[in-house]
Structures are given as structure tokens and as C-alpha cells.
Image (spheres, rainbow, N blue to C red):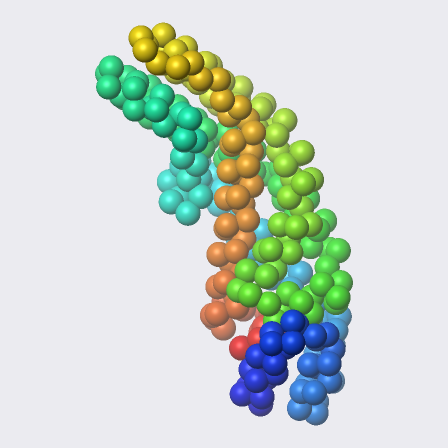
Length: 236
């Protein structure tokens, strides 16, 4: 049966992903009796909820961004020259602190994402689910990105701005940039750090959800409920 399902998936891809219902109809007798359309959508909701609960929560802890190489926020190109110049004049510790507080601001703000994600997950219909289930390894995360990115950006930006003040990033970077701009023969910089950290923080959130999705898709042991086991068995 598994070979037949795989063959059908290949055909689906070659035909620009024809309706999954046609694929389901052609599966061996009994498959749709055991697992209905609503179950498939519910299983995908459960998988995304699990990713939010397990992975996004990690980002909200201290060093959730800063010591996670998958999502660590590094300096934008414009500020890399600031970092380099300050280190050359003996201000390495200040430069290190500048990078750390950008990540601290993201860690402080990410908790705001959870309610928006949960609402987006609730809206998954079978029309969405049929594409997601037989899609790429990050298909569910891509769906969530499409559904939430604009809203999350608008929500995140003022939160990141507040977090900058909360963790002292605004003062640290004002000091860093002032010192750099006072170095002879340098061009003044005034980057939009709020926009940059907001975008990078969102990218980190989606990256960690994709980590959990990949694990559930490829590891049977990670399917922690009967529903997850049944739904993702269809794509094995």
C-alpha cells in the first residue's frame, strides 16, 4: 500500500498537485473509512500546535535566540563595519553587548506571537490541509507564514521597539552609533534596527516551527498522539 501511495504522490506532483481528493479516492479500500477529511485537517492543526508549544516557547527564554545558531540575530551589513571599527579601537565588550541586546529584544517579544499562531492554526480547512499534507517538508510552516506574516510584523514591530527599551538596546546602540560616527573618516550610520530585528525575529520563529514539522514528518517516534500517527502515515 505504501508503494502505491508514493506512486500517487509522484503523479500528483507531475500534474501540478491535482486535487488530493482524487488521490484519496484512489487509495486502497478502507483508507478513507479510517481517516476522514476532518481528521486530516485536525492532525495538521495538532502538529502545528505542537511546534508552537515546543519550539516557539524555546525562543522566549534567555539565550533562546542568542545561543541558537539556527536563529541567532547577527548584525546587518551596515552595522558590521560599526562592529569592526569599534573593536579596532578597544571597544570589543561594547560591540559584544550590542549584538546580545538585539537578540534579547527578540526573546522578549516572541511571546506575542503565540495567540496569532493559534488563531491561524484554527482556520486550517481541508482545502488547506490536502495541499499541506502531501507538500514539502515545511509545507505547514509555509502555510502558517503566509497566513500570519503580515499580522505578526505589524504586531511585532511596536513590541520589539518596547523590548529595545526594556532590555536597554536603544541606549546601547545609541552609544555605539555615536561612538562610531565620531571616529574620523567614517560615514555616519543611522539604521532602522526595529525593522531589522522584527524581520529577523519572525524568521527565527518560522524556522523553529519548521524544525518541529520536519521532525514529525520524518520520525514516527515524534508523532506523540494517535491522530498524528494516523495522519502523517499517509505521507510516509
